[in-house]
Image (tube, rainbow, N blue to C red):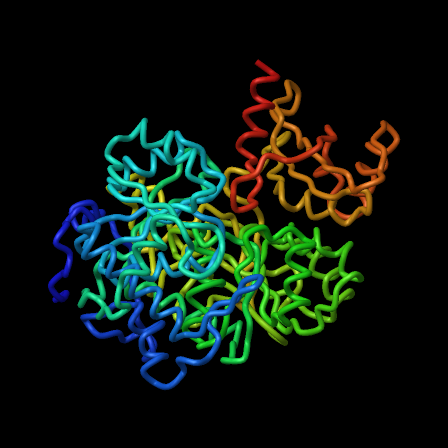
Length: 546
């Protein structure tokens, strides 16, 4: 029987999917046997200080360094302020809005330590998108970087439910602004709320690559489970590591890689507000970062600039967000000597559940199921397919999908398994090979063509900087493969290049898969997390044919 919830505000419990709609949760490993009462911040931060690691560096930023003890003090001040001055009770939702920064990290941890629920939002979200989050999560308080306050103020006019916005500055220290002034008056002495392991502490909103974002509810227990599966198996961090990367903390890939995982390892994290290729490489060189999290496009963008920076401190490179093209893997390894650790995760699963590292890496494959998780490829009837056959990826483990208000829960959970929406095949050795998002499979003249497979062929050409392939309606074939291509700098677009690229693809994969239409564009539409919005490109193509 689950422990009694500490939540006074019962919104989260009332809006969980019904038990019969939930996936099966598996806690097969000893390290996943958590106590019934648990506040994840106690385990991630307070225990480190109590066990003598208070002076170790926890958070770095340009011109700033916080020890574990200093971070704990700031987190306690945030929690004190929330409880004593702002009237937050366990179970309330608090919206967070900022670029990656020490203060955003302190706010996230302070909210959760106070028994409330963190609702972090991408910095690029606009008022209507923010308003949707506010309404869905019924948020009454926001902590916001003052530089991003204008859009949130507009959202407040659309959603008066958001009663109060407290600003903080973008720099270091207590952050300045309203939040900093209030924090300075606090003692920094706060005992974590005695939450149940199954109390919700995070509502993470999906990046909305196929439409409106959905909220996913994760428990205190889930936070630790994410830390205790993929990282020890593949990242293998030590307390001397310095983590860095590009994904926002509002994206669960970034939350894990740039906050939760380093704290669990008692390592340090380097937070960069604007992680451009130059900014990220410069920060790695300046701070001697050793673990890097970014998306495939991030690795590719940094390749051209590697010679300008000393990144010899790197020992681990982790990729997720989209499938890692083999060409990018090989180019990065040739330039740095480092093999990128690929992985697939999902907001619904909290973090990575299939991956491999070191000698277990097979270039082009995503990897094997991470210890603690089970994965299989199933057909439309839900039955497991034999090795080599393409089907739907299904996964289960200690984390899983709980959509806020059960929104489209049945679309993601079937028979106790989480269905990620990806088409995969598994080989006889248990390695999973990505084929496409299920909605990115292109049916042309009766052939099933994987858009990402065509993209992987195109990206190997020196003229191609980025690309995305979608179905374009065609009277004769039903659909054809159309490629939208961002050219590498200095490359001119013309008809000859189109033919060259088409022939290049034909030489690398089955000729029937080549892009029969190519359009050169300045940029591809993307989410805040860097995922290409292929559904937008499909909409453009359908509209053009109507």
